[in-house]
Image 1: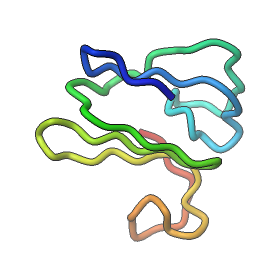
Image 2 (image 1 turned 30 degrees about the vertical axis):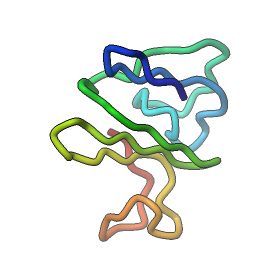
Image 3 (image 1 turned 180 degrees about the horizontal axis):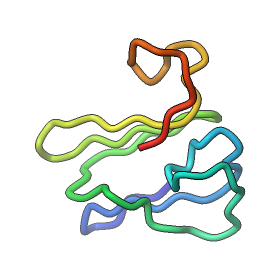
Length: 80
């Protein structure tokens, strides 16, 4: 993942678990902007999940939640 100076998030690579945040499970060979995210100040990603922190303090998480790593009450695969 990459964060632009304008607060936009771009992701690429293996997306089999939705960890790219594009609403699908497709591998991407080049950076694509993650829709519906703006004013992001920090990003983090793991092998199967990703997170973005907005300037407002909102935290967005997506991808595999097999071990509860998205911080939600469900272990389902979740997207943005």
